Image 1: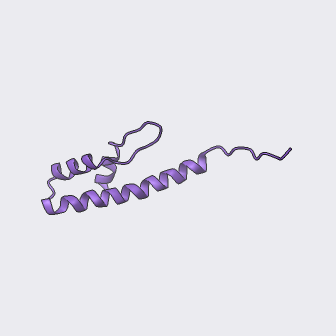
Image 2: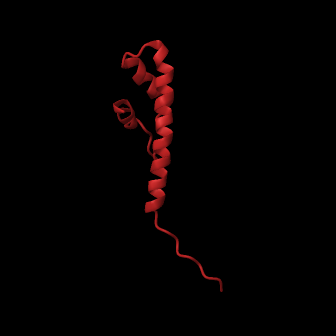
Image 3: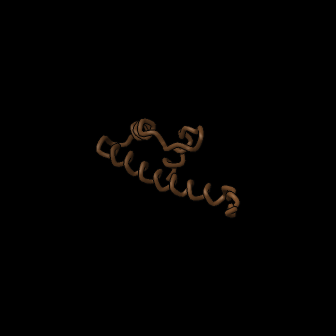
Length: 74
């Protein structure tokens, strides 16, 4: 979990919050000293956690978004 939150600081932010880049996940794994056989699983696990996080974040933003008034037919 710590790695996920550490890596979350590397997201690109523009029109919205982007995913954690693959390259930074690999960089983190290598510099954390993971054995070679654990690097790809680490990258995949963090990626899957990121998908869940991004889905949750999108749902939260949709809940908070102002609702457009319903239009009545003329």
